[in-house]
Each structure stands twice: as C-alpha cells, then as structure tokens.
Image 1 (cartoon, rainbow, N blue to C red):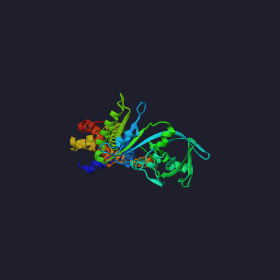
Image 2 (image 1 turned 90 degrees about the vertical axis):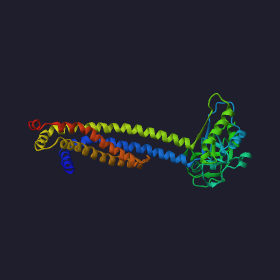
Image 3 (image 1 turned 180 degrees about the horizontal axis):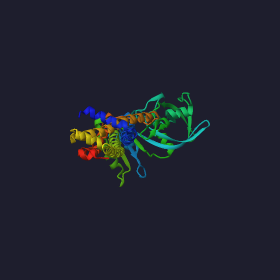
Image 4 (image 1 turned 30 degrees about the horizontal axis):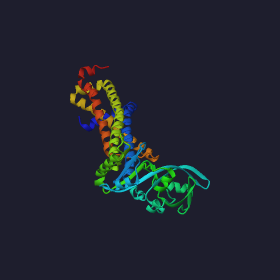
Length: 388
C-alpha cells in the first residue's frame, strides 16, 4: 500500500471520528503548548535579567559587607583595595535612613553616601547638573543627586538643579539628576538620593560601609581581581565567620545560566507528562479503532494484505493524530506566549525547543501506536472475517 493512500485512510478515519480524535489530541496539544510557553517564559525572564547584569559592564565586581563585626572597613583600606592588582576604581556606599522634607512633603527615605567614582562604575548617566565630586566629599558639602523618579516626585517638571531639600532637618542643595534607569543590582536607581560619603557618615553617625562597587581594569582581569580582593578582606577582618562576599558579573551570569538550565529541564519535564498522558490516549483510541475495524483488517488480509502493510497503516494513523496534535500545540503555545508577552510577561521563543517538542509528539505517537498496530497486524484473516 502506498504511503499517500495510507495517510488518506488515516485522515478519513480521523474525520469519521472527529470528537474522539480531538479528545485524543488534547493531551498532546496541552503538553506541546505547555512546554513552549513555560520554557519561553523562563528564557524571557533570564534574558531580561542577563541584559540588566550586562548593562552594568563585564568588569564590575561588588563586595557586600554584612556587618555584625567590630572591625569596620576604613577609607585607607578602600584605597589599598584600589591599589590591588587588576583593580581600576572603587566606590564605597553607606546607606542611612533619614527624614526627607520638601515643603509639605515629608517621608522616611534611604540616602546613599558615595564618592565620585560610582557614576562611571555603575554606568549611570546624568540628565541635569553634575555628580558628586571628590571636593564635595572632602569639604563635607551638603549636596545631593536625585534619581529620575525622586526628582519628578519632589520637583514635578521643574529642573531640580539649584533647588533644595531637607534631610534630617539639614538643607541639601540638588546638584544633579540621573537619567531613568530602573532597578539594578537590587537597587532602584530612579528612587535614589545620593550625597557625599562624608555627609552620609554624619547623617548615620558611623562609618559603616555596606557595599563596594569595584571596576576591574579589563574583563580578563576580573577573576584575578576577585581573588586579590577576597584575600585582602580575609586578612583585613580575620573573622571566624564570613562577614563579606565578593561577586563579579561573570559569576552572576554563570549562576543565572545554571539556574535557567535547571528550571528549563524541570518545567519541560513536568509539561512532558502531558505528552505521555496524550500518548496513552492515542494508544487507547487506536486499540478501540482496531476492534471496530477488525472486519476491514480481515478483508485486507484475505485480499493479500501483509502484516507489514497493516502494521504500517495503523502506525501512520497514530502518527497522523499525534502530528496534528503537535502542530495545534505549537500554534496554541505561540499564541498563548504572544498573549502573555502583551501583558508584560517577557517571552523568548526558541526554535530548538519548538522542534524538539514537536518531534517528541511524533515519537510519542510512534511509541504508543506500536501496540495497537502490532495487535492489528497479528489478526488472522478468518478470525477477522468471523468478527461480529
């Protein structure tokens, strides 16, 4: 029997039992669409996070200081870190809670004290005015730089540069505003208020540096610089427990890639269960089909049909059902992804995942179609003709 004639017979059988065929395909459709949507969702989220990390530059190293240790990191220690092999610049930060007042506006906010190097190390851009300078830090000047959202919140559409705000009752003059940048490294830069490091010490009453932003001299020197910084801090604190962590962008990207891979495998595996359930449905329907068409099988065998022909016929029918289900699953998965993307959930489609999912549906059709096809091919002509 020719292949095309067998496919036409399979399609005719599907048309004659539309409802049963659709119900059979549902498991495969759900499995394929789930794999595509879930994996695309994970990939889209991973790409968004990766883009944020990469936007900070491949040379960025961050040091988080946990506190709870008597010894604090001094400015002279920060200078020694800057002189380590592979290190280009260092920007310390001191966050402190203060009361912000602007006319009738009163709010408790976190103010970040830092130095002039933070602007370039973090890759931030000014929209107006200038950033904190070394002279501001050394002279303990009461100046502030505002994030985009905070500037709009306090000054509306007016230019904040030259204006003033009150922090814990002291007047600070706004010298610059930042371009909108959004959240990065756990901080929403658009909501930040930055002052010279020396003023943050005065506001908080202590010299407790919480984080260092460090730029390596080149991407190739990031790992050596991380090792140098880690060794220095270990000697500096000489603590029984780890009171700091040193992280590079490269390490973050590697960790993200590993987590994404694990999530993709887990979600793909969960969704693949639907395909297996769908395969069982295909097998059950094909077994019913064999029972209903026993007489037809007997006639074909009596007319010279071989076991191989009957086997191939029922395998192709199972394959056609699973392939149609796979195609519908791909279409529904892509459409569902578009809907989620339109409501703000990032999606990233992968042709490889689509092809693998569709191929898996074909494999399921073949595997679960073998038993019914083999049963049909084993029927004897006389037994089949006496059926009913």
